[in-house]
Every structure is written in structure tokens, then in C-alpha cells.
Length: 381
Image (cartoon, rainbow, N blue to C red; front, side):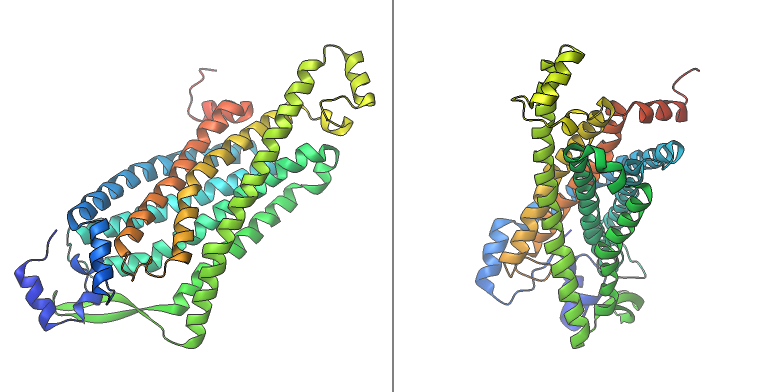
């Protein structure tokens, strides 16, 4: 994975190849003009360390992606058989579809980077093309998953706080519309990237043929739209969704503890009625106390899903904050290598969350477990 003398000679004669070829050397180099900053960055992550870590991340990421693809296909099939009369089935299906799509996009990016690393002579610039056809969409879809998880957590908070009004507030049609709005506002802006960048055919002397590449559109409108969409959908929205999930999960955990304490203190129907009327020290209202055990199991399942999401999304929040604070922490800055490695660390979190959700469904949802076992013919009956 080092540039030989022939490649160095070609780059010297054709400097434009550093940005337009699919050869691997242009992908890993830093582009800052500040030599002291480059020395510092390379001291943080040497060439050999970078190559080993990056290749290891690609293989690990793909193993997790394969698990996420299989798990979410099974989840979607089970939810389709269960039907969509329950609002929770609609939101969980949307979450599974987004997790599946995210794993597919990540697989495409892994394939392109793997081909770039091994210096395959492809008819397109694998690094740049994969960024425009997979990487950008992956980042925006990650925000979509965050908002769907936030919606599910908020819905369960309403189940705890106003259980008697839940069916009027959250309906199957309303949930379906909410999923469409979330996708429209969080994922669709990713297509602004095709305004900022476009595909072009360029002659590559290194390959001695014309290849497909990307080039930026330097119009003021394109640059403005790209910056706005990246700031809102790539930074602000994910952090807001993460905050909502965190707050709702904390509220759900507190309320579940209150409900468990209240139920343990009730030994008879008469005592239960007395406690509802006298508002016991457990702090639950009569409406809160009437939450069914079925709803409680669903709340516990949502808490488990949200907890895994929070843990897996923390690296994303840290990377987004670093992206905002440090100017050189991006794909063209002096910390390009650290940015790429952190990007692959992020790419591990979401597929892990998406592939483990099916285990939570199977453990905590009896209907899901029953349909899942029939689907795979695990039950003889």
C-alpha cells in the first residue's frame, strides 16, 4: 500500500491525478498547506497505523453490515405478517427499513474503499463516486434513524403520561404520516449533494482511458444549499434527536420504576382502589396506574431499543462536535485520516444497533416471537 517510483513519476508529470484517479495514494494523503499541522496529524496517526486500522475497520464493518441486513429483512417480514393495525408496528417497520438501507449503503462504501485500497483499475473513481452515491446518503439516513427512534420514545412517553388519550393522539394513519414527514425532512435533503457535485467523464493518463469522476459545482447557490443542508441535517438534527431520545428514555425509566413499585405494593383489588383514590406516596395518578401489562412490556422494549441507540450514537455525537469545533477535521483537512477512521467507528455503531433490535423484539414481544418462529418453521406445529 505504498506509492512506487512509477506512480510518483506519473503524479509528477500529471499532478491532476492526485484528485481524479482511482489509485489508492490520493485517498490517504493530507491536503493542508500547513506543514507543521501535517507533521502533528501524522504523528497522531502514522501511515502504517492508518492502513492497518482502516483495513481492519472495513472488514469488521462488513461483518456487522451482513448481520444487520439479515436481521432487518427478518424483522420486516415479521412486521408485515403482524399487520399495521398497531401504530408501534408501523414505526418499528420504518426503523427496520432504514436500518436495512443503511447497511446496504455502508456495504457499497466498504466495497469501494476496499477496491481503492487494493488499487483495482475501475472505470470510475471509487472513492469520490462512493462518497456521492453512498457516504452522503448514509450520513443523512443516520439522522433519519435517530428521529424515528426519537418518535418511538416520545410515543411511549405519551403512553405513560396520558394513557387514556394515547389512542386518540397516536393512530396508525398519524404514525404513517409522521414517518413520511421524518424521511422527507431528514433524508431527502441529501439529494442537495447532486446540486453541489456532479458526475463527469475525465481522461486518466494513469489508466490511459476515460473514467467517471465527480467535480464540485462552484456556483453560490450550490455552495449555500450544501452548507445549509449539511449544517441542519448533518449536525443540528442528529444532536436534537439524540437529546430527545435521551430525555424520553430517562423519563420512561423513572416511570417504569414507579409503576413496578406501585404494583408490588398492591396485594388486593380493594387496596388497589383505595390507593387510586388516595393518591399514594408512589406518586402515580389513577390514569397512570391503569397502564396495562402489555403496554408496560412495550415500554420496556422501547427503553431497551433507545438505550442501545444512545450507546451506539455517542461516537456520532462526538464526531459531529469535533467537525463543528475543529476546522481541519474533515475530508480535506489536515486531520483527514482521523476523520476517516472516526467515520468508520461511527459506521459500526448504527449497524450494531440495527442488528440487535431483532433480539429485543424476540425477547420482549410474544407476538413477534410467535410469528418469527412460524416464519422460520422453528415450531413443529
